[in-house]
Image (tube, rainbow, N blue to C red; front, side, top):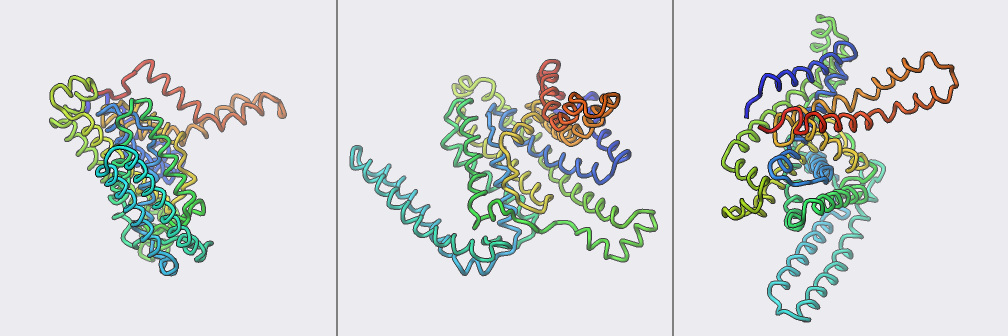
Length: 434
């Protein structure tokens, strides 16, 4: 699948809008939009794999993104030795016992004879196992959360370089997707959507409430960076002299330098993922996935294992979303479970895929950049337009006040309007699948 001249023009337009923000407003703002646009494009690629390749309607995207962010904490944050001493080993013992309980229940289902003995045996294993599990876990987590709750109150991580957390975040999301897919992928598309949304809410609820794992709503701050800190650059005489010789303020230059370093890392990941996605789509595997998407019955009649392929693409797409989540947490420098709002941001990622062109990887990337740019810039643009429209109205007018207050809703209004216009005039997206 290659880019046509019209597609290239669309990319130039979007990047031109971001560049114009740099020239007329601030390069810090423009690079911030560009960096989040790169992460958004990766999220859109993950959703496009599930929907565009296989027709899987997953609206639990934020759950997998949140798991990727959790992966960044578990890998890169330093361990809290006092918390480990207070209850770390007991938490591990509880987790192992919980896993053993599940394995025991599965073994009982397979081995015990049909009838009342099987039902009672499985129930006994699960009920007794649950109470023992809680008896081990609750005191341990309470002890961990009491260790300097204002500053830590959690186990911390492994203290490894944060870049290693990106593939780990992808693996964490992939593992959760495998477990979810084994249960939910037999459901019809609308039920699958409801199930994935519910599971995303469960994942985020756990992250909000289990302080020992990720500090809950107290947030994890100070996640290590893969790039220099601005203050270190500002204290570097060589950097300051070099920026001064070029006519740049060291404070502004340090911020731009850090954002450019992030851009290089994120762009490398996006290009690699795009190349792999294109190669997969053009392979026999990609043709098989599209055949399953277009007609499951015909593909199954040709000997294809539809359920296994659905599980495969569901895991792959979720892993890409988890990778994007780990990158986003790295960029923010903190994990804030309360900011993962499934309905709001899942909707935004789906708009990126639909507007860009589902089934087309380049379309998903274009949609990621375009929709994120509009998401950031529409509200200030809308306020400027409304202020111009109401400039002739008398101060204190109810209409003027109402219109100015409505500027805060310009984002959602614009997203809905764009979605309607694209579905009306280009229903297959700006860069449709060919």
